Image (cartoon, rainbow, N blue to C red; front, side, top):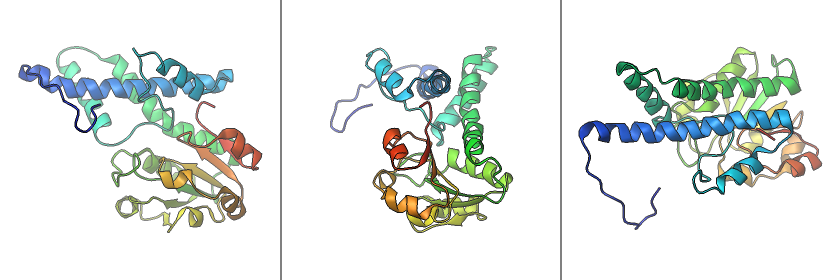
Length: 247
């Protein structure tokens, strides 16, 4: 990653190497993200804190801190596309890239993990109202391609839940994909009467909400923090039923 104004290296390669660079880069970053998500699951089983683990290993310059944020998985167009493309390229060359297949599998399984976590608290989802904060695959974009939020919503709908959602930029695009959900004007309307809330995208707007107001509006003050942006101890002290990822 280069900063604005910083000199960017210019390299000349053969065509095959040039084509592979982007596939390899995004596949490696995808691997890093799926790895930390798998570690997060182990943290939950051992009582460790994934944020501390990720911070500790990220201090090693050979590893670095980027793409070590555990959560509900990666989305967008580039990572899934380049990961799948690299797997296919390897297959055409006669190489079974099992490592990348597992990376893809781990990422897909994050979605089922979210539903399991919600069920552990709410049990039966049929007839329950679930609020969703964030629809885009990452903050500061309206891009919903391969967004984990959309797959989570689809699974909630299959379970018979009513879904209310809010996103600062991505609601118009999402409505074309999921017209059956309720789109709200702000975070507070989303949680009004909700049995639970799932934070899917770490928009700054969601970091600065009035949680006393949120508490007063929710039917049941249950929050699943899918991006680990909230302080667990603070949320619990306020009276929320709080679940993070790997914490």
